[in-house]
Length: 581
Image 1: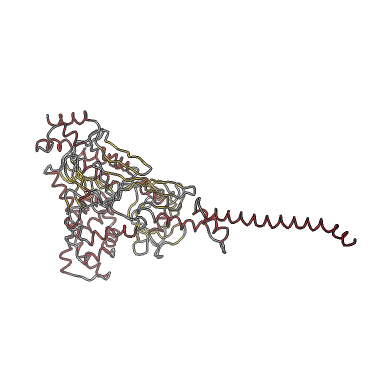
Image 2: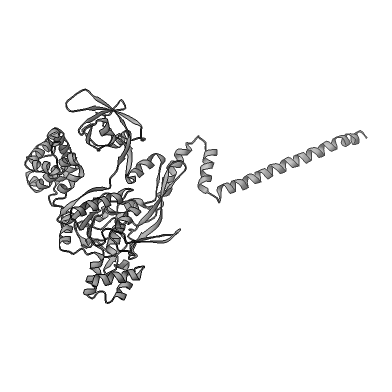
């Protein structure tokens, strides 16, 4: 009986404990199962990159700087795309964009490191530095009370220090002339213009030359100003130098091309996976539609430069002279991120009017191989002979006049000009690569700055320099710098060295206006362009139509309209009738 009574007392407790234990065990395995399912979900599907970063942040054994990890990861992602899609960290966005924006915030000087001292070469007229009182050939010793002389500081760091937010102030300690005591200037930073038309001048009777370094925000307005000036001087033919122009904003190039095209002419079209084909046509408002044009290109002419060259060539509007262009036919769009960083993502390809893509071949994730293309061209002899260039016969296209052009990697010029090696010797290479030639020009300018500043025009200074023993003086200077005299090589390179010395010295007092006419005096590509224009061999569109009909290449207006493919046949027919009347 006692045993039964004990069982009766403990039985409910045992049952309750068993139920509780069952609930606990069940919940444990249920939570364990949920955890596994959550973990499976965590590792699979969705945004894997975010998931991985979150796992590292929450579970990694040590504390990780996640911001630094992300900043290091994003560029690696972009390195697996095409060579022109890039990520720009927030601190670099302003510098990356300012070259094309037409201005930046700074003090308005150009400078060079003379040995270990910042030497002001020129001061921008009406800029912050000029207003504060700085002069050419001042030496900047301190910036914001920190010594910058004798420190072997990079020009990039100096540039970052001198630039800054608009209306902020930078304190400069300057040594002027032979005075040992510093003069102090408080310079309020302001907008400093960045020009993309380096120079424009009449290179011959009725022929204007325009050097264009990039396609930026202000390029079109600068270009129109240059054209107006040259036309006022009597120019009706133009040479546009795109050598070394790596591109920029496509709309700037389009607006400039429009100046040379009759209404309805196709300029360029773009197309991408998420961007349907978009065509751009000339609107007929251009001011140079009847003026002859020649473009100069080389292996560094890229992107917007190639849009320009392709439109001119495919429309038989003018001639391309020089060497094959770079071969960039991809369109990037800038996309700003929340932290101020930016990506430039390739969204489309652009095509010339004949339908050719001029983008050279590339493989995703192999940017290093892509970057070696120019070097490989050089080693293959492409800069020296057109025969070394292998054109893809499967990528033949026709210009509006029936000429054959090729896609698949840059714009081939109509007239090939090899690189000019006349005067180039190992002695010349030494004085250029060591910076000795440029350093001499700086010191010579500094020593004679008072006298040279009195000249009113660059031609006056140039005439004076031609009467001076610059070459002999330079040879002695170079020898003191450790570059051995080589009489035989100097005899070959002497004229080239002397002309460049004259050009750099004149530039220190008259900027690009004086530099380019001297520097390009014997430029073979420019000389060929002048010859072509004087002989009337660079034809405007209307001239080309007339010549094509007269030569029997275009049999009828209807056939011409079909070949030219204008969007407005009536406009084209009117053009042909007017040309042939």
